[in-house]
Image 1 (tube, rainbow, N blue to C red):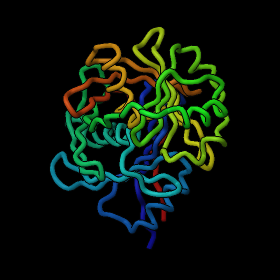
Image 2: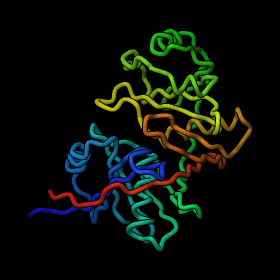
Image 3: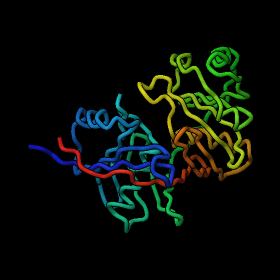
Length: 268
């Protein structure tokens, strides 16, 4: 017997279709087996597909799948999931709580129409012995970074936005580094900081359009440097994305808009 599943495609961290980062969102009545979830993510062929099941009033279990497997946190797909619930399924609600592999994640409507996500801070560490890795980075990038931080990602700090915008890295050199992504960042001209995010091991799209979870590492770095708790940010991918970050203790509040591109049904 065929099963019909609703699907939404939402562009996150933008208010314009074809910008930001696209994610597929599939609300479920109950969980499908993991192989089916994975096959849906493969078929969608987007960076992430989010699935959620309602567990109580205003509470959902949320999972994220890339085409090559499940991941433990995804900012833009969480924003997309919150948008589907708060603007499509339950527009009367102002808040939703997700249970996830990264713990509880709260998403709230803001007065300006954006959504605020409450995420854990990643607390990146300044690399204490960067000389060896700088040899690798000198081959991968045309410029040596001013500072290097590590979390789940490798974060390279530069001096100017123009350097970030014009960077053309040799990603093959980065494939053997023990980090999820390589992030380059600098102070912004019209915002507090800018960034770009690369996944050298991604099978297709090796530059991520907008990466909410990376800002859980970037926001603490720039908060310390700029002596500010609230920061504005732009990810300078081809699609571009805009974020507002606020430091609240060991949590990071990420705010951004989202826009619906597609809704329909999956038939399996």
